[in-house]
Length: 100
Image 1 (spheres, helix red, strand yellow):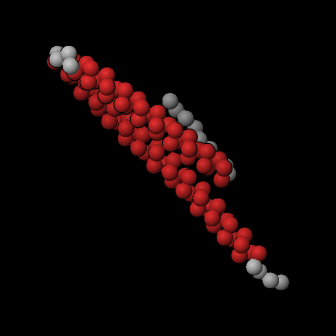
Image 2 (tube, one colour):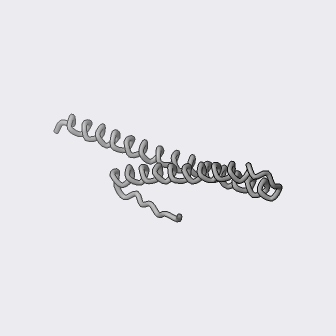
Image 3 (spheres, helix red, strand yellow):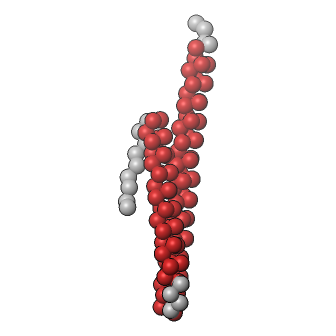
């Protein structure tokens, strides 16, 4: 699932942030599906199934950690875009007040 994101403009910055958040949701959904499958397998009661479920749970935890980081990254990009736009607007307003 390797992805490349580029940030070339404020709009691209926000789109990239939203794309990261979308990927975070996908990773979280996959982790939840794995955990549900693990619960089903665990109910079978065999030692080999329990060992497999432990591995699945570990993978699900790592996927949830990735999901969290992607979500945070998306939030940061969106906030940075808003910060840059706000700063740009403030500079434009300041320039409009300059006198010759």
